[in-house]
Length: 345
Image 1: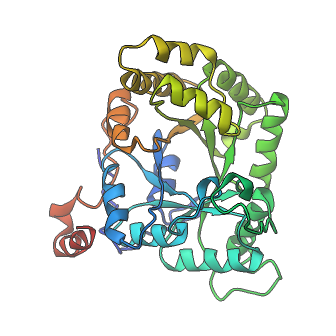
Image 2 (image 1 turned 135 degrees about the vertical axis):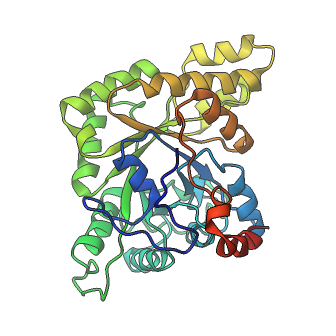
């Protein structure tokens, strides 16, 4: 099943009643479809074809692609530049904005630039500390945090103004997102933290990796009790583990990621640990799909991006839906898409 009102690259969508952006990602969620997003790690390069090569791995299987912003406090091509490249050929990027590296003046300028270039989705993050990355001598900024950044984007969109109060000539029409981590204590505070982000402006949420379904179920029960699942779209983070060794390293060194001993033991006992990691991820998605209030999954497969297609296809969560990508409707799109396709190659 296709959404036939989707445009060829560069053709604008109208903003539908009750929508805040003209993006396809918001349309999928508001249409009640179970959404799938993923992440693209920007290259250490100026080669735009490398960006397109990375994105094509996800064709037909995801509704939007997060573009990380200096993930882990490491330097790469900018999220804004990669998002602009993806937008120009029709993908739906989610521009990640970290408060670590820029003050409110620079951030607001980047938001206007992203909207001008056609980016419809933004994910607001505080960001990892510089000590975690490859430039520990860098000066952290943190002029804003994730909550105040959410409020900033909402003010720019709803009031058509900068934080200073100075009016914009035209407002950015972003679908606004934030992150959540239900899997670390204090557990009872996590739904309240989510409420704080929703109150500030979050309309969709992408969670940290889920390897503990029981904890997620408890969290979602609390979320529903507060009515938060009716106020935003919650996508749960998932991903394949390459081996028991990598699972142990992630558990010990990546803040906020909780991997139960049972998962590590299952990987250890498998003949093919990488294949078992993919199988676990598929099972997680299928269980998550059944939890009331969950609107989708966010598949993070760093250095295993080629596994995303198999994971999504085997999980069956897309049912008969084929997410839009630049080559999907090439017959209907005609010469314009052929021209844009050449830019990808």
